[in-house]
Length: 256
Ligand SMILES: Cc1cc2nc3c(=O)[nH]c(=O)nc-3n(C[C@H](O)[C@H](O)[C@H](O)COP(=O)(O)O)c2cc1C
Image 1 (cartoon, rainbow, N blue to C red):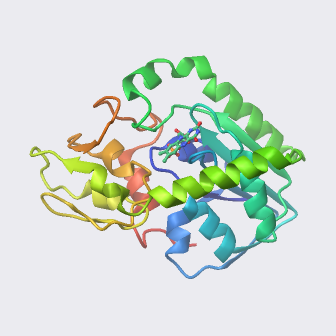
Image 2: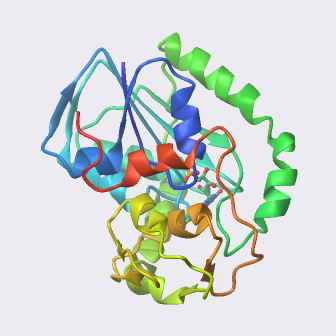
């Protein structure tokens, strides 16, 4: 089995780490030359963005041909995923991928625009995260078939929310402000999955941001503010290290 994951604050990587198999970061694969993967089972694990699939994951499905009798997708989300699973299924089918298993795991919501991370972290036990991940791992390891039928309405909703998400990314990084205690360490640049940040003091944003918040969640100095953020608190999954996020997202860092 091979797993391909995309993560900004560690939740999706934590889910991936619960499987014992080879694991590859989606930004890493996209920055390399591999465009064909064959295995007995292939999994994609990634977050929900605005009720839909992150653009990087859409690009992966478009660019990398997957060949397997069992392809599964697991989406991590923090609050309500709306039609996101329908969107994943639509994207998969559009790219000739037949999913055998599709599911989601409720975890800490990384969206600093809507949530106070300190409260999210405090309340995470209510989401029974480990129990739900174990159940999903068991189902995948047993090669269970479960996708669900994409309903027309939720399919349309997910297309709309994906469109709204795509419209606001790019120069959304103009909403970031770097505080004067930034020491120019370059971690923000290292954890950015789309190479949007030129390291420096202050770092320079290149306006191709996908608003994953990896830079601000992982800043060792907590020096990157987002306009209208709910609080100064930041989040990285406690089972994932900064080193692992850097390894996953530093451009050209991972190859198959
Ligand atoms: C840009 C953005 C949009 C998000 N949209 C949603 C959403 O629509 N619904 C939801 O439940 N969670 C949403 N979230 C929360 C993440 O899906 C969730 O916290 C996820 O587990 C983060 O995964 P990661 O830690 O692997 O990056 C969003 C997060 C970000 C950064």
